[in-house]
Image (cartoon, rainbow, N blue to C red; front, side, top):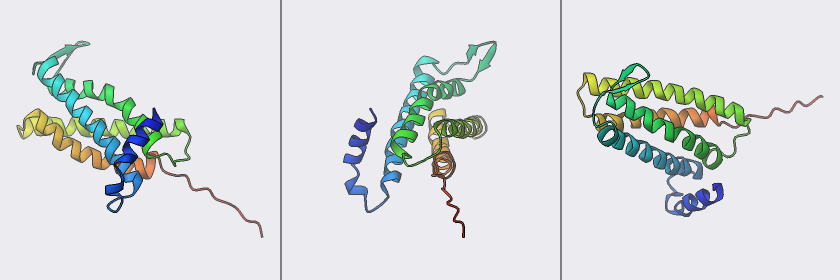
Length: 164
């Protein structure tokens, strides 16, 4: 699966090679796919599954925009980790479990940011939920890219001690 994804993504890279490095293009392509999937699942969940109604689950009343966010997250979290680890940040020499723990920390921060921004945009600024999700996505994707590149999937520096 990894090779197929890389061959498809890399096929479209040549026109962009003067604009950005391959890793950035792969992140944009994979992240764009996962983000589009996230927004699609959010919109379908909000409009057709939850029908813009309060969701009652596990003894809680959950607003339809938050329930839709959670539905999208359950699908896009594992896809995002797979694409980040095996397609985008392949040169990282950190252990897989370290990457997973860091990715989980990043995702928890992203969930918090998504929750806060969606609630703020919908409930305080009265922006339509799908538009709120789009604005939130731009903010969170920027944060996510920088965090993944410099923390979650960074390349561990190997130090060589020379006696002498």
